[in-house]
Amino acid sequence: MHDVPTRAGESSPGAASTGAASPGVTSPGVTSPGAVAGEKEPLSAGLKQRHLTMLGLGGVIGAGLFVGSGAGIAVAGPGIVLSYLIAGALAMLVMRMLGEMSAAMPASGAFSVHAERALGRWAGFSVGWLYWFLLVVVLAVEATGAAQIANGWVPAVPQWAWVLLFMTVFTAANLSAVKNFGEFEFWFATLKVTAIVLFLALSLLAVFGVLPDAEPVGLSNLTGHGGLLPHGWGGVVSGVLAVVFAFGGLEVVTIAAAESDDPARAVGRAVRSAVWRILFFYVGSMVVIVTLLPWSSMQPGKSPYVAVLDSIGVPGAGQIMNIVVFVALLSALNANLYGSSRMVFSLAERGEAPRALLTVSGGGVPRRAVLASVAFGFVSVLLNLEWPDSVFLYMLNAVGAVLLFVWGLIAVSQLRLRGRLEREAPGKLALRMWAFPYLTWAALVAMGAVLVLMLTDDAARPQLLWSAGATGAVLLVAGLRALRERRASR
Image 1 (spheres, rainbow, N blue to C red):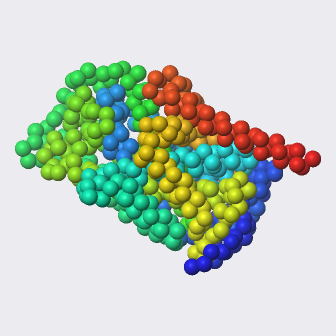
Image 2 (image 1 turned 30 degrees about the vertical axis):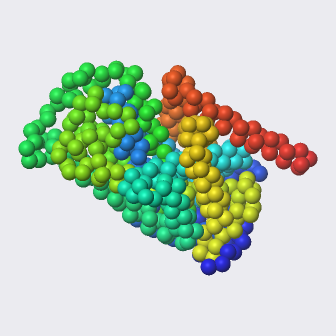
Image 3 (image 1 turned 120 degrees about the horizontal axis):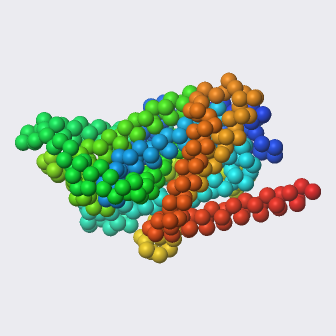
């Protein structure tokens, strides 16, 4: 399969229409692809509805839930259920907003394109590059985590060799047809969803004393050990800070929708099915965990899922959960490589990244964008392996709160674009934000509250400050570019 250099607005073999927005929903001076009706994305349309649905379901079911939830339970107790409800509600609102815009104006850059159309090139540039940086840094954490698990199984193979193997396999998958990425994610997500469903089923049987040698647990673990809110509402708030970032990853489904046969319909269905089911999986898991075990027995860094499976007598619970976490990490690595390559490709289409990244294969895959993303991912992995507590820690802190900046721009973009769509292209509003504009404003207020809480929390403050610095640097570059373009146009 040969590479075909393709520029924005040109079609290539395998190209598919993205259902571009009408000219009226663009901002003055925006030259983003798809801004003019009839333009096509040069990417393949190889993703099916089942791929997008499972990507939406599996995209946020990862190590943050299976292992990281222990830290949330430790600070909130049974109140972690409320923490997940609050954080999950915020994520649902963001996804509904993003779903509305993506169904009306599908594009491979998703919210970066929407921000550009709503607010100007500075916004699309800033959110696009920050999200790309977030994905390629987190990719290193996932590759290293999966390699550590694999090294425990096969100590003869060094950790760096496992990292090299994983990165090579998923780079090859992303360089080939997009349907290969879709198939990987479909089966990864299926395994994760199946694991959670089985966990919930076994846990409910244990709660009601149906399992052999089991007695009904009742409500003793909820009412004892300090009650439902052992640390008060402050504990619930701390729990929100501990779990809100676990919902990051849902955004990739709206990026992927641009490479489906019917982007507008596909993203609408994927968003509708994903948000409610994910909230059920997250909140349902927390309910059965704090019902079956005393919250005070939870330890940060230890999987509460393993603790529950051990308590109900599932043999090899630790290894079973290791396999699930291993798959979850590889799934996230695959999805982040895909999402980062499409984001930087979209930036290149709009003149916000080197145009050399616009090369698209005959099958509609942005190969140079994939290679650029995985190259930086390799650099991040090396930094994580060599300097996990210094250089890489600074990089990780620099992207820690970027997700909130992305979500904030999604909300502001939706506020701006919804009015334009209602005036100029109401037929494109196949999926609408609930109670607009009130819930959009409520989501923005909630994000602001999370930022304030992070600023007042000793553990979260460094992450927020480093992320604010990274965001400020990108905004400065965006401002300087805008100033240079204005001077050049005079």
